Length: 123
Image (cartoon, rainbow, N blue to C red; front, side):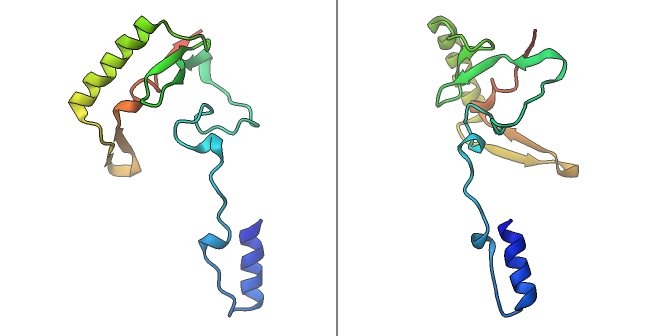
């Protein structure tokens, strides 16, 4: 890969300098926050444990679910109720994202727009 090429060139010629910008690649669309693939490469097989599946398959730009676990559109009434729940969560924690680092490297992320993403159903 590109880094190995640059490192070998530096080993052969110590005056040759390179930095991260010389070998970094653009983030693929599937890895960007909010992508339908949720950070999983679409060419890889995704394995789910014990028949657990996301409760919601798609979300709007604010993080409100729009499709159920079977990728069927949710009724407008359900979307409205979920939107109200999201607004209540935003009133509780605010619109900003906060990250709290715990011992051992674990982090707690408070972001109202993510409140529906970790929910699962067993089928």
